[in-house]
Structure formats: structure tokens, C-alpha cells
Amino acid sequence: MPALGKFALTSALFTAVLATAACSAPPPAPPVPAAPAAVAADWSPAPVVPLPSQPPPSLVVDAPLPEQLAMGLVVLRYRAENLRIVPVYGPAALDVSPRIGHIHVTVDDAAWHWADGSGEPLIIQSLPAGPHKVWIGLADPTHKILDEKTVNFVVPVHSGHH
Image (cartoon, rainbow, N blue to C red; front, side):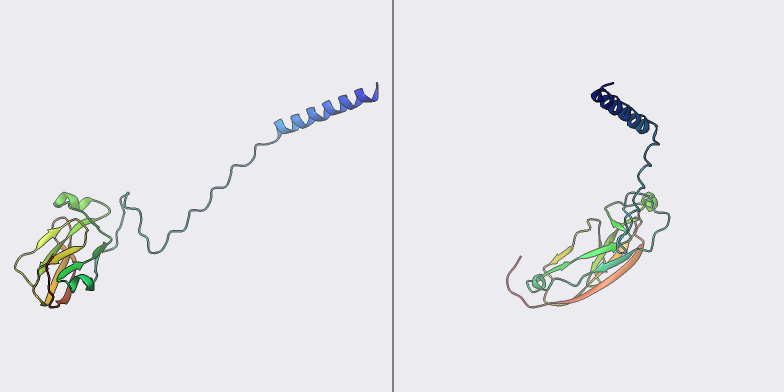
């Protein structure tokens, strides 16, 4: 057999052996799933699934913003922890998970209060100059108070209107 023919036959045989080996080799192992990403300690679970147990709700209220207070406008930022502020009321809402609720607000020990389910900062205007206090109660959908804070502040003497 000529040398070129032996080379062609050897190349063809080598290719056939490689093809057979490739076809009979076991499939590659499936990739190992990555470990779940670590959850930041200051994050709570995503509010999309029921939680088997929930820590108690709490209320955080900031002091009034000084620039607005100087103009006679009281702006109080607040947030609820372990409770979502939404305008949903009544006993059936007690079974919602994660927990939901709203706030009650009283200004200067008034005999009345208002409820708010917006989650937006409280804005109170036209208070006279002098000391004031705002009581904020974190409430469940049946209006039971779960946590409360009182903010004391002084509205300075100012000129102008809003």
C-alpha cells in the first residue's frame, strides 16, 4: 500500500476511535448549584409569602424636620417595623401575613384622633408658636394599638404662611 494510503487509513481509523470514545464517554456531571446568597442581617423576608412567626411590630418616628418647623410646618417621618402600613381595616385583615396595620394620630392631647394608612410622612400645619406634642399609635386592622410614640417639639415664632 502506498504511504499516502496508509496515512489516510490511519487518520480515518484514529478519527473513528475518537468518535467512538466521545460517544461512549459518560455525560458530564451536572453543574453544582451555587450556595444561596447570604441574606443581609438588616433585611426582613420578602413580603410576598406567609410568615409562620413574626416578630412584634414596632414604630419608629423621626423628630420634625427643623427647616419646615421654622416655617410653622410640622413634618414627621415614621416607619413601622414588622408591619406594613396599608389602608385595610376590619377583623378579616388580622389573618393577613405579613402583618398589616395603620397609625392613629392625636395632636396636643385632643379628644379625637385620625387614622392614616398611607405610610406617608405626617404633615401638620397652622399650629401656633409654642410647645406641642404628637402621639402616634401603630394599630392593627381592628384599631388595637401595638406600639406608640410621642414626639414633643416647639414651633418657633415665624412669619409668613403656607
